[in-house]
Image 1: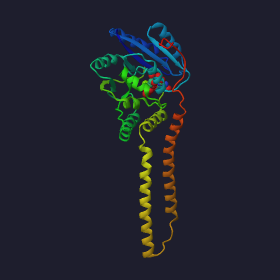
Image 2: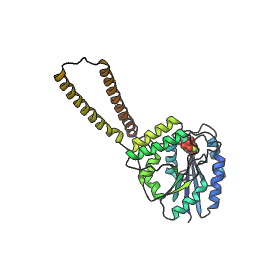
Image 3: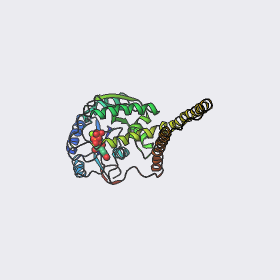
Length: 313
Ligand code: UDP
Ligand code: MG
């Protein structure tokens, strides 16, 4: 019996990349005949011709499973849909825009055979990113890892090989908010890191703009840390101590020098400052409460319109 390797690829408006993606994956599979390859291609509500092209790939290549989600659920949900269907002894999530070279899978498999349960592909540089994106990425990882009890390695994306045991552990995580990088790190397992060149996109444009990345960062932080909630106790404590000392100072000053002319400007500024700080605190609470609200509804992470080629079809 050959070992099965599952590739899980999310597709969102990737019409320009579908045929090239399958051609390259097919070459990789042909070069590794000791394994059985399957591809789970998840169409995440693309608005272009991606789904038809995936159907064509499914007809052309025997072990391509195609899954059509009922709308765009986002990359994390699309990956979850693919991971739920992956039957492999090893599973590799991979971007469909050819930024993750499928050729690296051979090296990943070699590490896996040597006993690694997770093989992380770490990008050697960030040349395809703008200066701002590079800086914010570095700062995000630094901040996230400082305040969370799990460590998300820097410059590591979803491109990785996972043993079946790891995928099973991931399937057991019940949360709806799926910050995959964090979940991957949370499950642990024996991990090896190998470098790769993160190339430019095949065709099309990235669907992650600044706002989406900001929200992804918030998702990451709120999913794995409660530090932003707890900090308010100390902010409040600090403000109270300061107020107490200031009250003492005013009392002593009044007793020694009599009543001063009251300062309207300083009063205004401190009222507004404290108001602002309180609103920020409420905003942070809101971020968490909003997530609790979504989480308790227990809605499915994704919905499938149709799928072909999988064991469940
Ligand atoms: N993607 C997806 N759903 C989305 C956005 C993106 O399935 O809502 C897929 C996309 O097709 C690609 C991968 O996720 O395979 C990474 O997306 P993208 O290249 O836009 O992000 P970047 O590489 O810039 O982080
Ligand atoms: Mg990309």
